[in-house]
Image (cartoon, rainbow, N blue to C red; front, side):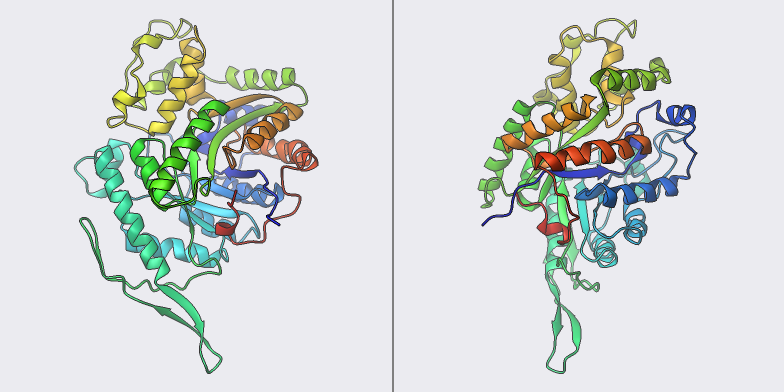
Length: 434
């Protein structure tokens, strides 16, 4: 009998996803200030307590503004290795750039995290997008999109080969020994002899996740990934992405539906929908919107002219996603998500677009505002469609909102029969079956 299909909820553990007013909101609520590292450990504790499938830690491989909004956290692999010592069950997915890392070095680091966490490690492969960051890594400029994904494809081939060509064996004398074979990779971009000198964990190798939004990204995800981080603002767009990913999976000889799509979601919830909306408005009240307005589209390398932040957004100035897929300066899936969100709301103001794109946290991912029961109904509907494996949750109001979700929403999800009532004991790679 097949296992019951439960909703997977990943906790995104990055303060960069907070609402722009979150720190002042916490201050007004008399929530004690914590160090950046204390906040990271706090995410880990919530991960276990809330029965989350995994923590998902993004990476910004350089400083993007000073003072830094997120407090300057440790890079993901280091952070998650520390969090592993404070957690028992939650998976630990670290983001790292295939453009800026060397595959052998990254294979060693992630395999070490996998050892430290006893088989709970995952790797979110990204190609990175911001030109200024490339200058931190001895590059004269960023690679174009096609070149980045060509590199990512070969990078992941090398990574998987290094991880797969090793084993722990119990020999005839009763002792367990580590064996590894060279991979002798000679590619267009990488020449790697191998073998890897880090022994495998109980799951063999880390799970591979990928944020595949563009055509090139979907192709790489279909070839290598075991979970995909997506941007879907509606159930229809989730179904469309599911169909595109399944087509790409079949072209790679893989089973349709075998790789779950996990869209991002920022929940603003309270006892009633009215209270949730009031809380969101209070967070909004702490933000000076005008200075951040240019970044709403500027993050994608797109300039949109406007005179007043309260005027209707000039939708006609937005380029069609297909026209900028190869030149977009940020995550393509996030641009598609924002483009669709704007077109679904005729007459939306510039301020509302700025709030959706940057002000209210979680980049351009879907924001949900409603009661605890409303959110459970929403999750149940998406889960019932079968097009997503769950959600990557970003709590834009910080620890207080995560605590509230665990206390109020998680029990309701368990009662609805769509969420696990016990912690995950399996290695991370064995959890994401549909």
